[in-house]
Amino acid sequence: MHAFDVLGDPVRRRILELLADGERTSGAITDVIRTEFALSQPAVSQHLRVLRENGFASVRAAGARRFYAVDPKPLSEVDVWLDRFRGFWDQRLDALGTELARGTHASRSRGRPAPGRHRRRRGRSAHERNMT
Image (cartoon, rainbow, N blue to C red):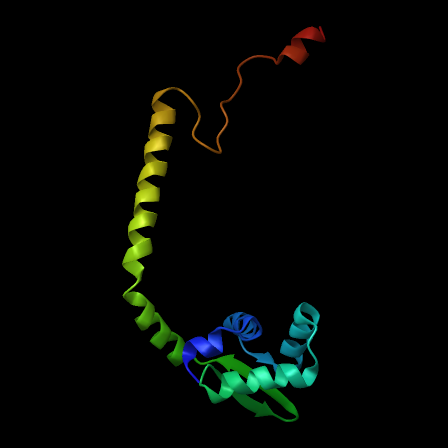
């Protein structure tokens, strides 16, 4: 199965997101997936099997429990493939960053507070003046 076929399924992507935070038991994974996707335990097990058989996850047994973890090798191969397309969005993100910086600079030079910042008021508010 091709890497993008594996990653094309939202359940498998969610399982990988869970595993990105660290090793988890199959039971813990199943609990989350059953809640979020309303899948049965056997269906979750099938998704785990696909991830394992295609090298995206590894499993180790500890007694009756099975611990799953991400195997980064297939993800690094996807990253290499995506690398040729990064130029398309990197240039746009750089341009966005430049425009945001220009807007912040222009706001400050006109005496306006930068986005997300508020000018500090001097003295009392109109409400406070009317209260006296």
